[in-house]
Image 1: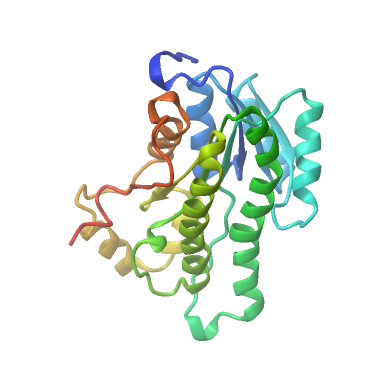
Image 2 (image 1 turned 60 degrees about the horizontal axis):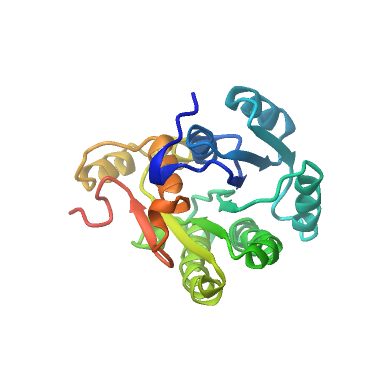
Length: 255
């Protein structure tokens, strides 16, 4: 049910969410719809997107898109424009996880993770910025990670990609902030998603280690990330620019 009101009201906003059909992306899309926004979700799997859009309701559209396709960003923006919508919010959420020791990670595997997170996010950010700058209005979010902030073994490619977001956020915030576009990030802790289950599969010791160093003693939910994304994209955060907000139950400061 849509119940937008007050400083968190996103009525009139159009949010483009990559990887919006599952996991964190779906949680973010759901939160944006509830806050009054229209939403476009993207991803590689048509059936997943169709099902997600059906469940999310009439204010959601979907476009099949692979962020690693170098020419896909422009084509995606054309498709969205054909709907009569123009994104005022971009959520760079699409990702892929790789759990491997550094010596066993091939150059191709490393490159594939970087392509998804870094090159894909850059291409789409570059595609949405001109219209945002022209209207002097926009919010761009990058989905960072605990691996952006702390050392995590067996995640060299993922950590490199997510750490790159920190520099992108800060540089862009300084560059386009004066032009009316805010750029921020969210660093989710360990959230109950299929990606987390993949990362923890067959590794009970890692699961216990994560929970033991999280002061709240539990995993988060996608809705926790959705609420943070709504806040950072709303009028309530009009003076928030260039930050990376940990939403992690205290894991980044826990012992």
